[in-house]
Image (cartoon, rainbow, N blue to C red):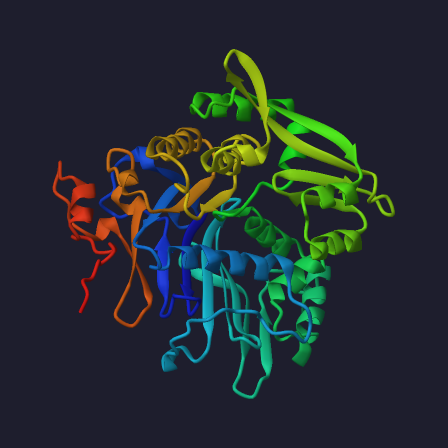
Length: 444
């Protein structure tokens, strides 16, 4: 489970902002958090968090910072390349062109802290810590001095002295030369089979990030192969009054070039597909499966949405469905996946996009009612202020994002504000009491 996340110098985020899933001391409602047993005692952790604020306040920048950090951690970097970091455009001298990403999380009964700092060219610092009864203790630390020399200290908590893994770790630390300074030591340990690193990387792999334009990879194939999954989605769409009462998946063998001509597919896309030679390509909700040298005999798989119209069953294609129904296909699998994996963290940018308030509320309520026996968490951004409901959320589950006078995104939980019992939090927010609302300016 995620406990804390700190990020600085990324897109609209300048100086460090901290997001915490640890409830405020005043939070008493047991229904809002999970209790974890750690070496330093029992810790309470929230399982939901929501970000609200005006357009261009930095809500998406926060989610994108997580996406960057995850990709940088789990995918590694090519030697000799830069880091690809997108830093705050308004330079602050005290940030020294350096960005920081820091995570505290709970995994298999232990609390870890992992973080790194980097510039556009290289990693400057990196550390992995573990919670003891007294404090956080290092597993390894890495620093690069002003002369470009990298020092990595490995502790016995990571790998015992004289063990095979320790010897391997020592060899790997010595291998970080000038061309590898854009690479994380954690990834090198993982890539070479060091057990502790594999465990940490797996935690990051379980972070699922969904943007407004995200689609579930392989959805038609999953529906075709998993009857329970297909039944769940169909019943959910029917329950949510989308007009869809059933889903089917159809497969047809086609000549891809004829199909591309029919839909006027740009030549550069056809060329890209031909270069892939074999695999799966997704276009407009349809999946095309082809094998090497057989692109002219391609299997097209697509989802059909069955509606009752004028007492007849009519099948719609994906592009015929509303934006809301298509968005639900991105989000509903989360509720099903929760049954399969109990340690996933979902970050959803604009959970309310194209959805009625009641549908957004339904998704969040369903997550809350099904997450108690799991380690799953959900963090979302939204513009729909009707979701700010203190009957359904604790104050420390609601966060406000806005920019200061220097153009930096700032983050603050609702629990920082005093709200009297019975006070309407939504009305107080719209009246500007908590900030983070658009300022409509007149003509000067």
